[in-house]
Image 1 (cartoon, helix red, strand yellow):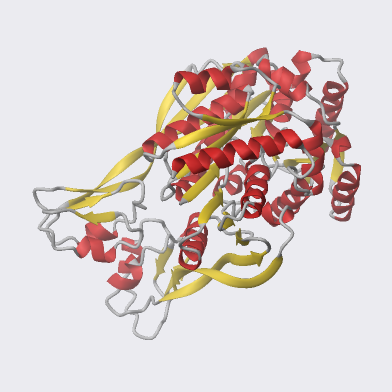
Image 2: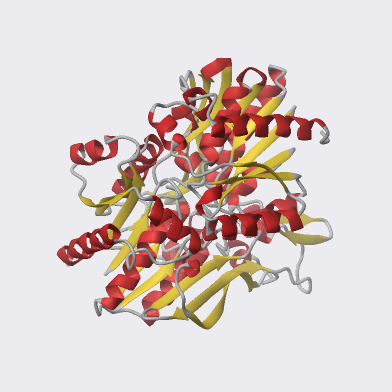
Length: 296
Length: 282
């Protein structure tokens, strides 16, 4: 089993449209993981049926029993997250600020504080277009621990892939460089970087690639909106060249991305003969060839 | 007054709008300050031609083991709820990247063997142009953006208390965007009229409702996709502040890091809508 993770650093580069196209092309041999749990979108293009749902619990919040609370203020004094407010006759916890560290509950002499496990989101396993399977999630509103939910989605996807003897795990990764993307990257055989020919596309690519390097995972790149700014596209290619990262597709600025999305289709289904669809197909073939020779 | 410019989906134009809007407001003679709180991928500085005037190292406090009086009782590891401390028979190991800086291990240690010491997580840089611009930038390999977002906000609030403050927020709906929104007076959500835009907007709206925030929507790249975002806003009674037309010329200027409104009239008109809307909030 080979795991391919598609990431972008910057949002809006076409990452999900591209990873969904890979998922559509390889559906029968792959398990798809949508690890962009903050703003999951793959289900919209892949017609996920949400056939299996389970609660995802993560993190805890302190709850103060008003009856037992003597208003001594010990909890208030130790909380570093400004999560405790003094009311008239008792103290109260603001769950959004509470980090779940337990410090207040440990110092409370009156056993007035208990820690309650929180539901952080939902995990789904869905049947998708072309006979594929997808693991995906929805983070609870204003919930934390998206990194842990990402790890849970990946773990679920991998175990399905092992059980069903699938050849690939195709993962749509999270944006940024923090905990969710770090969780997305762990254990990958190949990273596909999707960038765009803009000044911020280059900036974010440089930053996220430094992170990828620390994982020592091989990487390839797709440059989207290539003709928007040829000078910038050249700078991106130069950077990738220096880093020995192969460019596997150059896609022009193309409203097909949006048009296909508006019909809830992947780029391949929308028009399989279009230039952008052809290039994505060829990129996927290249990816399969590259991962053949990777370890694990 | 503090306004957060956020979006569920990335790449919808937060940075384009916030940087152009700040320039425009400063030209109108307003005291305005912009902070880039997208600390994982800060991009505003690519669009703001400004002089760097100061850089401050941002730290969080982490426990450091001091062997001297330690009796290796293991209480520190017992009280840490984040698996950031391992008590071994011959010493204490700390894992700073897992630490949430709650101080429990340090303060509950009977022998004061885990003093909290500053540990670098990133930088807060101030730039000066027609307006002050402050950027938070997380160091690579740091997992937690929230403490840096918090410190960047505190920096601006202390230094520019009476200014109109604009926050360029991180994308998504989880902890970083919550930190960048929870103390603001108003949140502007930028979206695009596509299925992804709508899906992520509804998530952002639900998050803002949980936080009890007032918010309005800007529809960017208006004219592509469908009109479901507009229908959704009408149904939910969410004000649409402006619609920015889909225009490849805007994308081209953006790709070079240039300001949009001096060259594109319809974009300037949209900024005018936003300014009027903000004035109506006061």
